[in-house]
Image (cartoon, rainbow over all chains, first blue to last red):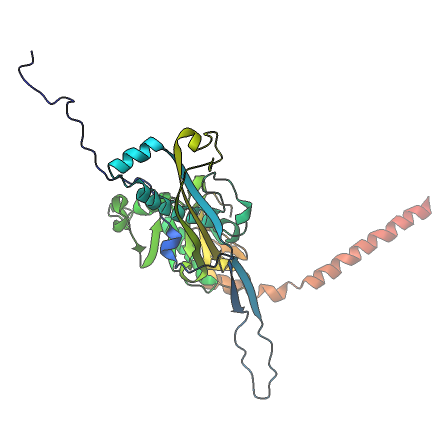
Length: 301
Length: 73
């Protein structure tokens, strides 16, 4: 009929010039420990401990050797990279509406690096493939930490207490707890009594992000149980005995030629494409493995 | 369950299962003090050297019997 004019699909949605950043990722290790400047060639940290207690010596008594141990931990930076192909048409269209895709890519890359630090330092695997990386052997928590508590979904608070006990028995302080989402939800579902519905940790209710529980700094992150790993929580002295740093961070690079991702997509110029690349060199060191304990699912006693 | 570090003597009372070097489960029901007292006198009562000395002569006794049988044939 045409007597009533309706909106229908006549009006396209307005275009916003802001990209919604849906890149997810953070580093529990970065939150629980301090970063430090790291030389590109790596850095060697010395650990020094005295093996015994002071000796009570009688008058004219003979003294004995107390002994000491000096060890080294090398923080060797490793290279991490993220890149993606973009068509020339996307680049021109984005520039015309001032779409901040480069800035968004850089921010997303930073989150991926943060997450990558956790995955590599916790498990010693390549974050993209999930495969064990030989360069990370004996440089990750899974390889180095021998204090293990078997995860019990019904009593996660007991798991934490036992893990803390192992660390403190080695005369170390506990400064943080990194936990997997499953461990956090197990804590959140605990009740304060057998007949009570009141949660034992109300601050964890309904997915709330918490920074501490019972005064202990905590961080919940899927990196702890990345790639179906058995780790559920890692407890220890992150503040003093885990060190990490960025040796070099290369600004986001826009590559116009060649085949920078070694893919079947071929030459960039041959396909009117550009390649966005972020690259960084990061290193870390677990200085004293005894200062940490892991709560693991299915670990044998 | 009570866990004890065999090197340092540190103890942890927990319902969790611990798997760590030098840590052993001591007992499920016994209280800490009773266990430590009960285990203390055990150490001097089990001199390993004496046990070894007792077993050695038994082996020697069997050897001459074989020789006797051979002489009969």
